[in-house]
Length: 497
Image (cartoon, rainbow, N blue to C red; front, side):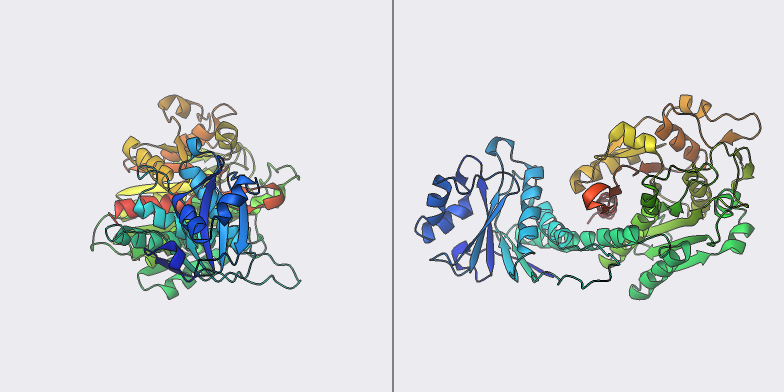
């Protein structure tokens, strides 16, 4: 895909298709009016007849209008003028690219009216065009035996109109948006794979492959004996019921100053979660292949850091295991010892993600991080609390949590802060160990975060519960690529890019 900017008159653009907007009030946008004037009023007549009502996301493709260098015009609905903002603009842009992907159009110029600069400045305009284009062209990595559909013909997208003063910001946004969307597609591809392919060892090989492609990356993989030497009793307890060996994957991007404290990203990589002895219900258990979405987001974020040559030190840590219920599996009532030396009573083997993360978080201490962020499809309770719209954000550093929430707003990948006060820690008390791995039904997402907090004392730490946002069910089942956009924006802002 080639992204460029355009600045000359829209009527002279020699592309296969021009993308312009129409509001519900039968109102042509400025660039659409220029086309209408050149075409002898064709668009105005069409709108006046009610042939295109301008509802948000609707499209209508017109061919061979007179007075234009372009061969086609795609009318795209922007919805009501009074409610037009960043979200309707994104919907319109995504719908337009999706419509063109079903045609033979090879080049297109985006000329959709923008919201005001406060909602969508030049940089985020360029970033949005590139991100939404790459995302709209994504094809799910299915394993069907039939003939694969052809890739979309679209290979060049121009964003504009830009002025001399805005061009640099739009071009920077285009570059970042393309890299961000490619990274999100890395997460999608990993998440969509079945558990018999995407195993802990497969994730490790993907990380090694990433390092072979990018010189800034270094990868280390700890196998089971190495983890035993690190005394990772919690992570290994989860893995012991599976024939698939666990892996701890460490990816380092060295883009900042030598010795500068890194940002550490930690991901839950349960490549399939049966629930263990606390077996999950059979319905929808196939979706537990997505329980490694946190790990996929870490790998995707490190690929993004390498691709944009982020001038920042970033470390990714992935705890990769399967959670299965065989004769060696941990049982409710078992007590295990974490690498931090703290003991944990297992009351529910389906609360395994926090066990995996506990040892991975403790391992992160050796990097003396400037900030540590973990992400995990951790609790159904977070889905109940926030639905599928926001990821849950927790932490021991309010400023860091606020950074992540603001990054989510900018990236249109939102998170919502939830409390993490000492009262929730009381729910984890155990008669037999330092604490239990669950704290009852009440505040389940928060007590899970409170468990993780016990392994992050003294570090600036935040936790993202992405159980409701990392994948979608139903007819469009698949990985969403979230929270990679949020993490990419956070890293860009940290790197001052």
